[in-house]
Amino acid sequence: MDHDHGLCIDSALARADGLCDRRGARLTALRRRVLELVWQDHTAVKAYDLLRQLGEQPGAASASVKPPTVYRALDFLLAHGLIHRLESLNAYVGCPHPDRAHDGSFLICERCGKVREVGSEALDSLLDEAATDHDFTLRARTVELRGICRPCQGRPS
Image 1 (spheres, rainbow, N blue to C red):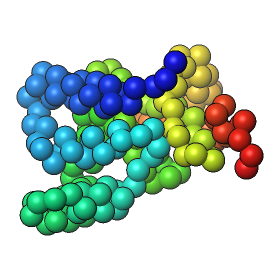
Image 2 (cartoon, rainbow, N blue to C red):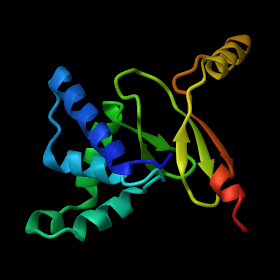
Image 3 (cartoon, rainbow, N blue to C red):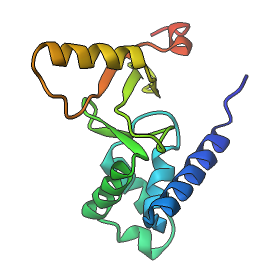
Image 4 (cartoon, rainbow, N blue to C red):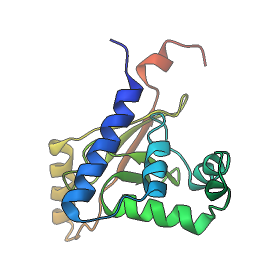
């Protein structure tokens, strides 16, 4: 079955609209556009790539976007769980489950750069148990696993 990425983006934006409405948060046009750009494909995107993409758009407002503006938009999206930050890549991906608080676990393809968020209660439980066993209090948990996705496994490297 083919992936309808347009539907993927539309769904992410609709979830963001609903979540922000329920929380009384303002999803400005710029924040919405940054979220849309993060969801453009399933690869991680860096802040300066977002800045470049925003600058390439027609209109005077997009040309005046500066790095602090993009970082403020990213901070808003992070704070509301609409995106995740991949520490190892210093980049961002859309969150498919912004309506529930969670830390992310990610599969990152080293060839095509696609990122897939995977949830695993069993993994979360093991990590919590390991922290408890070592008298360690977890503040955040992000697991980034690198490898090769199935489509790339069939392609020559």
